[in-house]
Each structure stands twice: as structure tokens, then as C-alpha cells.
Image (cartoon, rainbow, N blue to C red; front, side, top):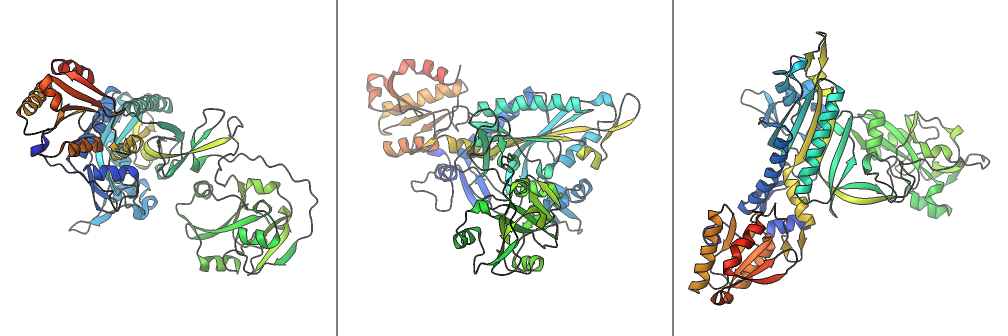
Amino acid sequence: MKLSNSYFFTLRENAKDEDSVSSNLLVRAGMIKKLANGIYMILPMGKKVLEKVEYIVRDEMDKHGCQELLMPALIPEDVYVSSGRRESFGSNMFALKDRYNKPYVLGPTHEELFAITAAMDGKSWKDFPYNLYQIQTKYRDETRPRYGLIRVREFIMKDAYTFDKDEAGLDVAYANMYDAYNKIFDRMGLNYKIVRADTGVMGGLLSEEYQAISSIGEDIVVGCEGCDFSSNEEITEVVDTLQDDTAQELPLEKIYTPNAGTIEAVSSFLGKEPKDFVKTLIYCADGKLVAFVLPGERELNETKASKLLGALELTLADAEQVKEATGARIGFAGPVGLNIPIYMDRQVAHKKNFIVGANEDDHHYKNVNLKDFTPTAVADLTEVMEGDICPKCGQKLTFEHGIEVGNLFKLGTKYSQAMNLLYLDQNNKLEPVWMGSYGIGLERCMAAVADQYHDENGLMWPDDLAPFRAGIVIVNMKDEQQVEQANKFYEYAKSQGMDLLLDDRNERAGVKFKDMELIGIPHRFTFGKGVAQGKVEYVLRKTGEKVEVAIEDLPALLNKIYNR
């Protein structure tokens, strides 16, 4: 591509409304442009990168026996009502009505439609197994779109679905897709970890995520100093290491704690530490008030709490709801005498003589023990903390931030049963189909690579993802020899099927060099003064290494760059 007659621009200054390094660089490189919050235009240079991502994904899907199709994005709402997921998605789903007042949604994911498709060719056990996939736009009304392409309202996803007659078949299909995903992310050059994760609204038997390590990642990837344990923070078990307190139980006592409505304030007032407290949090679970009781130094893990209750929606209670449940303002809730369900973290069972709110303004109880209240259930309810004990080997846990770029789900028979996807087995008995679901966010991959591959001068794309693997800079457009030799080299590359970028603009050489670095071209050929002596400067973007190459040796170097 010649820049002199192409749509191309870059920005010298940082983008004002971007909140991550990757999105700022992608905007400055003229690859993306924000249209609205969570909605981006993919511009020509960015589209080239996205096509490279898509090529790798499609290539590995095809190699692993998957068949591609394309589903509609506009879907009758009844489809999600039938599967029981319309309520789960709630306001995250874009909804609209057609001219006949029939409700539709913009697809956030397509499990239901693939189940419908499978029913067309899944009547007998002989029809299985098979694997279908698509590369399609998804829509989700995110509450907080941010970090450029990381969390958006409209995005391109590769979603694949496997169909098998039994769980053993699903295990084989899952392993096949696991191998495909490893190859995909390895080819992209991503630094990633595979972690166990919550199945969320997808449901099913198992979920694993591919997390690209990133300082701006919204997820916490939990690892271990001593073994290969890897998990998403939201499902990591907090190992119960507290020992039973053998101290003698003391008499319950109510104490006056004026204006001390936080753990920190009460700790300061009483000269105690957070570990001496047990805090009580009031939540609204599907419209009903409940209490969670946990150690004062810990935070509630809402994913664990939701799963324990089987709640679709779990939100922290507001001041009015707290008053209704406890009779006091926020900050003074406690389990003693509380008349709503109480769910207690299992570590509290080891504590004695702890301090809790008294359900009365400006008052707490001290010397509280388990005999003073009755929990509805006891479970692991808290967030894991860095330095906690690994549930696998007992060493210390470590934290890293990650961007979820892909996921694998063993759905089991959840959707087939909901959508009546059944087949006749060898005994002529109807059985539900076993399904797996596998997603990759293409723009997220692009943003994650940009986040991992950049320096102070701009993007540094790996060869296989760069918009152009190599670029040519003509230093002086008035020098006929430079122009002639550069174009000759460019035409040679085109004749060999190599897509190069030729900067033949009437710009200063410094501007051209900066643009090549900003957009992340891995290999640069500079046709400058050395052309008169039959020499061209070659620059490797990754290291900044510069070498002079004889013009007659350029084809050999180009073949090496393009793996010919």
C-alpha cells in the first residue's frame, strides 16, 4: 500500500478520552476512533490488524475440524425466554421492537441459536460429534465501558459450539478446542495464563479463561509461588487456616460507639484491630434482604455469595433497606437478634469474643460468640487475598491482572434440555445432546497484544499481527534514484505476494520514521542517501538494530522476513 494515495493519519499527542495505554496508542496510530462510549470505528490500518487476528483464529478453527457459519445478530426475544436466560441478562441485553410490536434483542451470545441449528441435524446418535463456529458481532449494554476495546458495547467474537452424544464425547471435544486455543494465542505472541473461572450466566459444568497478563486487566489472575495453580479471583477458595480459639467465652456486652460506623472507626475507638471484628453486610438478593457475616479484615466475594443463594441479582442494600433490616443506620448491623437469613463465612466459626454491630445507632456488641446467633448457612464467602494459602500445595498465592481474551465452557445438557435438543440413542431412547461453548474476543486480542507490545515510541506488533510486516521509507521524494529504487523494490515485493507499506508522502523523513514506529511496522527499509552507493538501511523495530544492506541482497532478506 502506498501512503500517498491512502486514507492514513496519526496523532502526535495523547488521546484525551482514552483510559489505557493500548487504546491511546491505537487511536494515535489511526487504527481506531471512538464514536460513543463503548463504541469504536475500526479504521483501515486497524482493520488490517484485526484481519490478521481473524486469520489466525479461523485457520486454527478449520484445522481442528470446525465448520463455519453465520448467525443473525437480530434475534426474537422469545429465544432467550425459552432458555431461561432473558432474565439473567436483564438490562445488559439491547432490546427493541419491530413495526409489528414484536420484541427482538441484539444477540449478546448465541448458544440458543446454535442449539436450534443442531436440532436440524441431530436426530440420531450417528449424527455426532460435530463442531460449528462463527465470527460475528455481539452486543452488550455494559454498565461501564472502558479501556478502549477491552470493554465495549459492540464487539466481534468467534464463538464455537461442540455437540456430542455423551459426556465422554464432550471431554474429547473440549480437549480439542483447548489445543486450538493454545495454538491461537501462541501464534499471536500473547503472554497468557489459563485459569479456572465462574460459569456465570452461561452455566454448565466447567469454565476456563485465557487471561492475557496486563496492568490494566480487570480480572485478578491468582497464581502460586510453589505450584502451577491458576484461578480467577472470583472463584478461588480461601483456605480455612484459622485455628479454633480456645479462649474462654466472655459475657456479651453492649458498648457505646458514637459515630463509629466503619471497621476502621470502631477499631480506632476501641483500640482493636480489624481481625477482632466480624462485620455484617446487608444485601438484596432477588428482592429479599439477607445478611453476610465475615471476618472484619475480609471482603465479601459476591460471586460465591450469589452461587450459594442461587441469586440472579445481588446488590448491596441501600440506607433505607439497611434501616428496615436492622433498625439502625449503615455501619451498625450485626447478626445478634437479626431477623433475616444470615450467611456466615466459615472462618468466623473459629472466632470467639468478637465485636459486631448491635443493630442500634452508635452501639456495638463485644464478646460475641456463635451461641449468640444462628446462621442459615456457613460457607467460603470471602475474597481471596494475595499471600493467602494455595488450596493445592499450601504455598503463598500471588496476584496478576489479566484481560480475558478467550473462554471455554463445558455446558453439558443445560441448553439442550431447555431448547429440547434431543437425539435417539442406540436403544431408541431420547437423550439430551452434550454441548460445549468456546469464545474469543477478536478486538480484545488486538488490544491485549497492543498492551503487551509497545514502547515509548508506539506499537510493536509481532510479525504475524502487524498491519504490514515491512515498510519502505523514501527519505527524499525529490531524489529520483531513491524514488525509483524504492518503487522497484515495492513492485518486486507485490509480485511475490508480499504486502508492504510504502511511505511515499511529501513529508520530512523524521515524520515518516515516527509514523512507522507509532503504527508498529516490525521491519523498515530506508531508501536514503546510501542508495547512490547501492545501499539501503534496514531497521528492526523490536530492537532498534540498524544495518546496511546491498540493494541486490534485499530480495533474500525480504524472503527471510516473510518466511519464504
